[in-house]
Amino acid sequence: MEKTKKSKSYSSQINCCTQCLHRMTLSYQRFKNGLSEFLNLLQLWQKTLKVIGGKFGTSVLSYFVFLKWLLTFNIFSFLVNFSFITIPQLIASGPNNLSFNGLELLTGAGYFKKTVLYYGFYTNSTIRKTENSSYNMQLAYIFTIGIYFIICFFSLVYSMAKSFYKNFINPQSYSGNAAKLLFIWDFTVTNDKAVKLKQRNLSTQIKESLSEVDLEDLNLSLKQRIARIAIHLVAWVASLGIAAACCTGVYFLSRSNKSELEIEAVTLVLPVVVSLINLLIPFCYALFGFIEKFKYPRHQLYLLLLCRNIFLKISIIGILCFYWLNDVATSERECWETLVGQDIYCLIVVDFIFCLLGSFFGEFVRRIIGTKCCKKLGVPEFDIARNVLDLIYTQTLAWIGIFFAPLMPAMQIISFSIIFYVKKVSLMRNCQPPRKVWRASQMTTLFILLLFFPSFTGVLSVLAITIWRRTPSKQCGPFQGLTSVIDAISGWIHILDSYSGSKWVGWIYRNLIGSALFFFILTVIVLIITYLYWQIIEGRKIMVRLLQEQIINVKLFCATELGSMLDVNVLICGHHWFCSSSQENPYGGREASLLPKIVTAGAVL
Image (tube, rainbow, N blue to C red; front, side, top):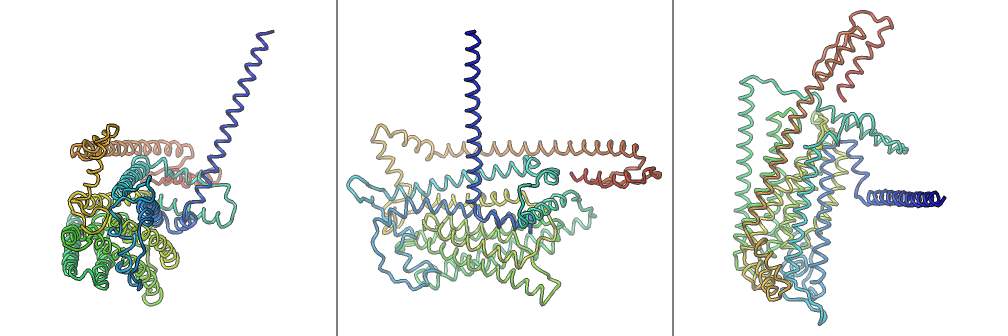
């Protein structure tokens, strides 16, 4: 009896523990679902992105997703810089006695020179408001910017690896055609507008998937291939020559304006010329695309995006950086860092204005001409390559400008927010969906790759030269009086070495951060990982090809057996099966009439 009572009490304890664990699990699931719903509500432009994806497809949607992603980068950068750099300086700074005439909004000069917008306004002394509290502005300035770029580096690498795995290594787990057709409908959607939007979105996704089923290579003769290669070579030579001429003109124009940098109106000449080049030359490259006659829009997009427009824009930024670091930085001006920040401010503002003008003339006026004057032109399509390159161009300038103007991300937040709404309205009213429906799931990976290289890596190179190789201004900025910016950290490390408990910081700085061998080993590790990923991709491609061959054999066997059962002849051509009855079906031929639809749907899935 005692054993029975003990066993019952023990089992009741187990049941109580099980119920407690079950309740805790349910509570955790409810909390998790509620938190995910709350985070979804906080996401920017969620409904707008669904409408764009449903009407124009994922290719156009990828631009707006990329724009939203860049906006989050700039919001984070602004919060970090404003909290750790700007607020302490505002506490210690005095009033600004300069007058404001409105032209500063375009030039960034005048009144803004004596504000927290630019590098030259920040102090090099330790800020003290009480006897027991102090704030070293030199260390705060360089560590805040340095940690921000480290976070950006890992964020870009993580986003690129995640998107790469999703779209290249294991794409079928995210975008199965059968799952989209049969299991993706959300039965909790009851609102009429939401149902129509969901139907349109699913219809566009299925069209994009089916558009890649029957891609066939062009069978060209030897003369046609030689002619096509010759056209490509001529287009390449012409595009590279145009880019080289534009870069040469920008460099000589910047040098000619060097003696007149103090005049506000003159500072707008260089940004206007650069923005005109960035606006007009891509249209010239687009004409080359019509001459080359690409069959698939993805080929045209990748070629124009990767090899021509990106080369033009990054080359112009490289020429400007060469001018800033070799002409402006070595000049004997009062504060060359502020002048560089002013140039970057003008470039971003003028490029923003030209972006709005490009939407007006390139889309609105183009629609009026295509629908009223010359109806053969028709309604324009959204230029993904040009718009994405504009975003990468301005973000590259903003990253460079963070050191010379810590509040540059605030400008990006304002401009990106306005651009999103302007582009959305222009897209809905002036553009038509792409004539060739095609899936662009891998474009996000391409955009992040272009943002990482050459954009982000080029920015790191420019900042490295600025910090290690250039002498700061002697009369302004947090690093005045030092031979280089890095000397601020070296002096701080030297002070820490005098304390026994902080010597490990100096060891890390000298053996890791300050060692070229460490970065060499790190680069080798990254290259090895990249090579392994590449081999994984090649292996998966081989497996996919073998599985496709097996699927074709299984289809042939099943079609033959099914045809013999229904007494029909089955012909497999590519992905489609065609059936014909060899004799009249005693049941009215219903099975034979339904068979082509069944097997065609099976081939698509």
